[in-house]
Length: 170
Image 1 (cartoon, rainbow, N blue to C red):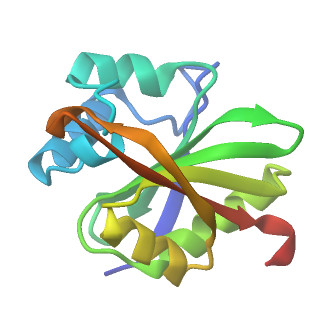
Image 2 (image 1 turned 180 degrees about the horizontal axis):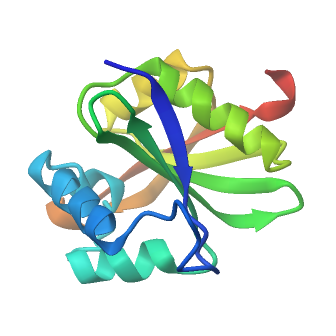
């Protein structure tokens, strides 16, 4: 695995230099689907198609950043925040290919530069791989909320694990 670089997406400026092109956005979705990760990332069924993905990731309330392996010329992760308020945001992520803890450190530093002080998320209790990866890079667990995660593709509800990363404690 090579050097990792960030490629933020400026949703308000579609012609922003360095912005991922539609081809890259579509390729990211296809990569998610190939790895079966779209059903974990959008476990509630809110995004099911490539066009829905494009509309979602381009929404001005979503702040995506892509992690690129500069040597391999591959997208290694797409991470985004939303629900931003008072320096706190909800975070979402999808790792593409093999997990690399450097991705987390890079994203945390980026979020600090944005002025965020805390990022939180809700992960289905059954997504043990995601929870383990988040714990490995310093995310904390604040507890579980029963029936929070509607696993659309499995037609059942499971507990959501409330996780957070305090960016002031890095």
